Length: 223
Image (cartoon, rainbow, N blue to C red; front, side):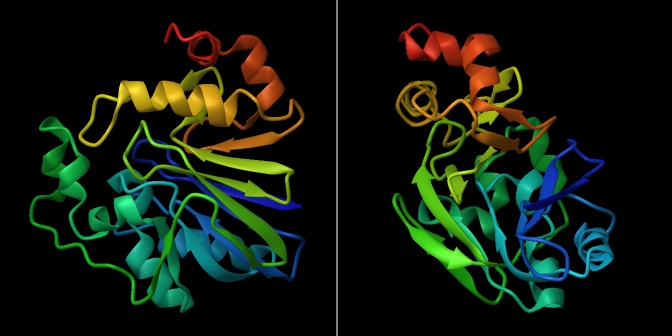
């Protein structure tokens, strides 16, 4: 599996580029904030490996993960995928921002990509030569989602990081839902599963089960 990442300067969001190998179709994940957007940097990285983007996956609707989705989808001529509960954030990202962060949207108009595919718990599709299986994982946002790729890779978005978890104090976040997500949808996964998070370094489920104090606390109901 070919995995490359473009890290946005703003909030250090990981825009993952995933393909079965050079010269093949590719899935793009979470195109974040760039100047003016991150689309060209992502497409240049894909071109370096002779990859053809065929879809953009959004793990949730926070602006630092969706800022560049419309221009990227337009340039590549591809659809975006997002859980139905977070779709409204494509046009109204301010709905899930803190009061302090709403200045990020001032003077800007946000639109959906031309084609948006709504995901739900248990959705499964074949794209870019891989199997994608989606699991609804609320807590960070109402529509946060996990994506399993060929049972080898987990795209965790802002649910799980190396050594930490996503915050739950923003609008549509829920501490109780995050605990349920971590306990029932993260903790039981296989040790060897490779985890590509929304921020920070990649990790594995085994490493997080052993060292992530937040995940361990959630597993025993004491998060």
